[in-house]
Length: 134
Image (tube, rainbow, N blue to C red; front, side, top):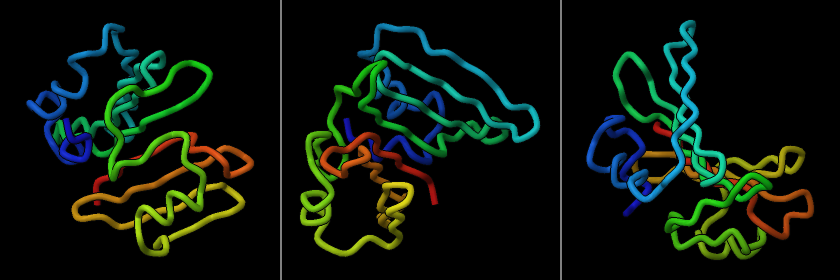
């Protein structure tokens, strides 16, 4: 399953269902009625989906490696949570379009989404990968 295909797809599309079909935990679902945003969080599985409630489109996908759980599926661009910042930048093959040392992340514009890689405080491991619709 190419997780990149979920960004921008429908909340109940084959891509989104394919991404979540192997997850056994039920999501925690909350809706922000002010922003018309739905949050589907699978904490033990390291996955979070943000959905625009008005269009039912997935606007962001969070793939996490934290104390609650680690995302076990394939990561985009052949990334691995074990990679450090230098390895990620080498794999992507070009400088990030945005980089914030203070907040420990790099962002690259991809084809139809932004790829944001957030690092552990020492930059020696990926903490989270975020795919955001553009």
